[in-house]
Length: 381
Image (cartoon, rainbow, N blue to C red; front, side, top):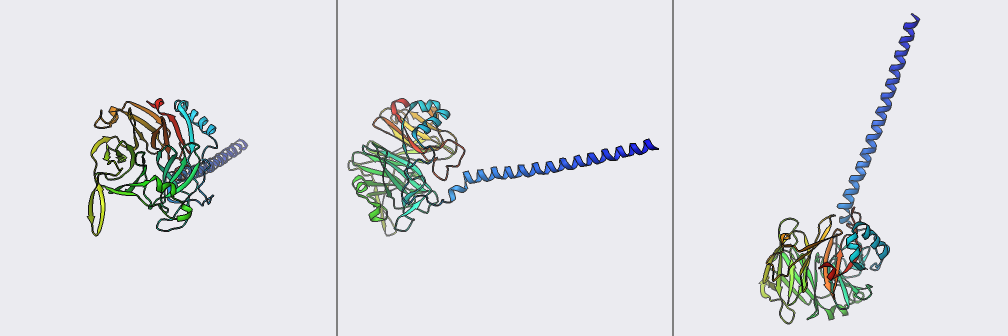
């Protein structure tokens, strides 16, 4: 009897221990699930915030002036070290950098109003280089503020002034005509592509502190042969204007200029308003996701980028040798960090602009470039 009771007690104890173990396992399972759900929610929130939400809002401005400090790398040395780690071959070719101003704050106007205000979501798009200046076009990601062009010294890289544009266009490309001293800017929107010019005399005389409003246009054309003016550059006696397509082949078009630096246009009437319309003289097919083009004496150069993936610098034979610029015809390709926008060759140097350090993209998990990267053009031939 005594042994039966002891055996019974052992069974009860064992059963109780197993029940307690199950309870502990259940508690740990619940805790683990909660942690995973919280972590998963955190990761999901981070992805949503980094990839989407930041583009819909502007943070409070830290500055009342256009900022000139780098927003990602404290110095050129720190940037070069990071580039050497992630892009060692590219780092060997780097000759210098110029900090992109205005990524934390840019002086401009609220769209539709006069007066000076500050935008914190300006996003770089286009770039042109002249004997004296570097010009960078930027648009407000939230579309609250007018687009701008930032004017920098080519010799020192120092920021000189803001040039406020008349609207909120994407300003995807800049082209400088050195013969007639006009700076061309991509304008308009889908189905209403435009090419707009500002002459250098007007640009140098423009003072935002005085006018507190946009600069006046010198020339303005509706482009009838292309859906959007996604990117643009100058070639002798012409503008090269391209259409960005996320998927599928896209178009590059050449628009001829006369000796006075004007496009060969036709005056048309819309309602009670006259406007100048132009169509391309030559068309070519390109690959998708092209962000800019540059015609040099030896080659045609294209920048290609999309999302957080590597950008490419693509090299082709001159337009006279090719009728289209499909990747099957490509001569050379170099990998660059994500979100490369316009490339520009001047005085033997290749300048490369990026949008990845803009507020809307800065939290994304990829290499950010808060400065123009400069190379010897010959190193990329």
